[in-house]
Amino acid sequence: MTAPANYIDAKQYFYYAAEGPVTATMLADSLLGLDGIVRNAAKALAASANITLKDAELIIENIELGSYKDCYVVRLFFGKGREMEKNIEAFRKALGLKDMANLKTYLGIFIGATVLWGAYELFKPKDETKDTIHIHFENSFNNWAPQVNMKPEELKEVIIRATKNKEELKKDIIKVLHPDGNESTGSIQIGDEEAIVIPKEVLAVVPTKYEKVQEPEQERKLQKRQIIVRATDLDSTKNGWAAIVPEINEKRFPLILDETVQATEVPWGKLFWAQIEVEEKKLKSGDIVPIRYHLRKVLHKENQPE
Image (cartoon, rainbow, N blue to C red; front, side, top):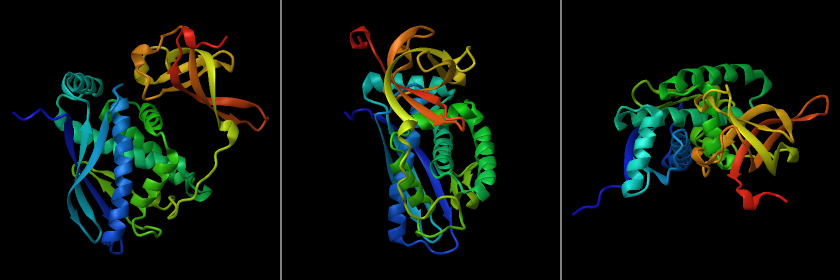
C-alpha cells in the first residue's frame, strides 16, 4: 500500500522576455535564484495563515531557451499525517481558499510580491527612478493583496517576516532579473492566467552584480522588554499586528511575529516579557525612534530578567 503524500504541488510558469539570447549556463544560475525566491515566497504564504511550512521544493518540468520560459512545480511540505491535515485546513481557512486548486494563483502573487518588494526595499532605487518604481510598487501591492484576502501593508509585512536573510534574497533577485549578467531591457511574467508582471523599469533599478551593504549598527537591537500586543487598528489582527513597548516608546508601532512564534501563544492586550528586535531610524533632530518591532520569542516567567 502506497503511503499518502505529505506535500501539495502547485504548477507555475516563469517567462523572461529579453532582447538577446539566454544560454543554458545563464539559465542554470537564474533557476538557482528562482529556487531561493520561491522558497522565501512559500514561507511567507504559509506564515500569512499562521502555520510553519516544513519545506518547499522547486521542480522543473519544461524549459524553452532564447527568451526563456519554464514550467515548474512548487512542492509544499506541510508535515505528515494528521499534522499535514491540520496545517492544510488552517491554511485553506485562513486564506479563504474554497479548494487548493487556487493555490497556484496565491503562490504566483507571493512570488511576484517577494521579487518586487526585494527590488524596491533591498536595492533602494536611485533618486531619478525612485518615484516611478514606488508608484508601481504601491499599485501592484494594492492590486495583488485583495486577491489573497489581505491588505497591502499586511502582504508587505508577511514577506518581511519570512525573509530571514536579506543578502541571500538580494543575490537571488539579481540572478533572476539579470540572467545574462547585464543591464536588462526585458520583463518578467509569472503565471499563465492573469499573470504577475515585473516590468523593465523594475529590472533597471536592480544592479547586475551583488555588493553587500552594511546596515547601520543602531538599526536593529535585540532586547528583552515588556510589551503589550494589540492590533494595528485595535480591532483585528487581520489588519496587522502592533505593539507598545513602554520602555522605548508609548506609541504603537507595527509588530512582526517570527515564523517560530505561533499567534496563539501571544498574550493579547496584556503586558508580558518578550525577546524583541527593534528597528530604529535616526531623525534629523538626532532623536532615534522605532520603526517596527520583531517578536522573536515569548518569554515565560522563568526567563524574565531579574
